Amino acid sequence: MKKANSRNIVLGMLGIATVLSIGGAVSSTLAWYAYATRAALLYSGTSVFDNGQLEIGVKSSAEIPELVTLGMVEETHGGSYYYFAPAGEGLSSTYMNAYLSARGYASDTLMPVTSGRFDHEDSNYNTHHLLTAPNSEVRNPDATHNLASHATYSQITFAFKTFRTNASGNREYVSGQELWLTYVQTRASQTSSGNVAKAMRMYINRDETYYGANNGFIFNPSVEQSGATKVGGLLNLGYDETYDFDDNGEIIYGDYSIKSGASDDGASNAPYAGDDLIWDVNNKWDWESKPNNEQNQKDFADTFTATHSASAPRYYENLDNLDIKTAKYLGTDDVVQTKDSNGILANPEGKKTSVCKTGGESVGWIGEFDATIYLEGWDFSVIDEEQSHKFDFQLRFETNRI
Image 1 (cartoon, one colour):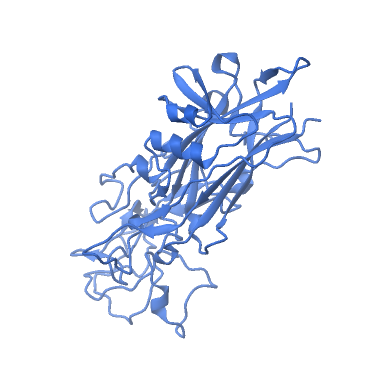
Image 2: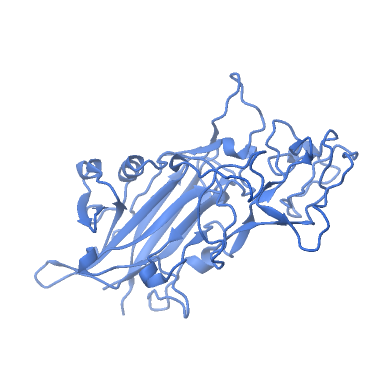
């Protein structure tokens, strides 16, 4: 039997810190686009198997001499540059910071962005572009959204090679070997707390030749079941505890439309005249955390839950008339592959869950895939209370022994 061998990649990311300052003072309520995660992005191979059958590296369209100086081995194939960690080593934070920085991507700071509407099963909405935060001028798909700067997220093209050692002690690289993601963990770090890790997303884009066109998907490593993140709704981006509004009333940010059959958007044309209570118009709360009249309602105010301002010309008691669009994601049940009773990895019937497959001599025996790592700003975890919290993100890739 061919049992699996592995290579771990550990991403340790420090938590949210404010980056917005006005007149030397930082407001107590910050828009989600004003957050940043700051960290030394730590990618370290922690599993070295007996026969060293797996090499791991990264790909770049431009040469990065610093990686060679640091000890990585450079190869060129098809006009691209590949850098592999020395045999038996993983991708250290030193390697990864140099790789990301040279390509203009975030190496020690992540800013919440958004994918906008996304559905890997719908060809009309399965193109993945990261966008900047919504604002009062960018409220729906008809408005112009700006692409997020590379400096706000990380993009890594992982590269793998598998080999056997022949009778003469020389390496023989092997094609057709698939690699799977077999372990993932997102959690608050040991020196912190909070839930910001739940906002982590990884967009995985694989080789079309083997996996087919439009095979990319968003992976949410903090959940087991696949689901969706709403990418529209009311927000409290002002520096108070009320939902944002303008001369027309409360603002619906993000991607939405009026539901078929609804006569209007469902907003009340009269100013809000109720008690000064926090409202969960975006349906963030679960039953256990939902406040009651005996609790201090103000303690539950955040970016997604707020009061209605009596000054707003119109307000939304709920969003039932609106079709709030979503970014669909896959959870660990659909992405993380488990071994059978014999320790063998295999794709489930009718599905290809592996992330890449090693090629032949013409491509340097390499298998590769693209990973875009970012914080989804519409995730309910990206709130003020998460400032300065830290989290860890760990991945392990494996292939069957040769």
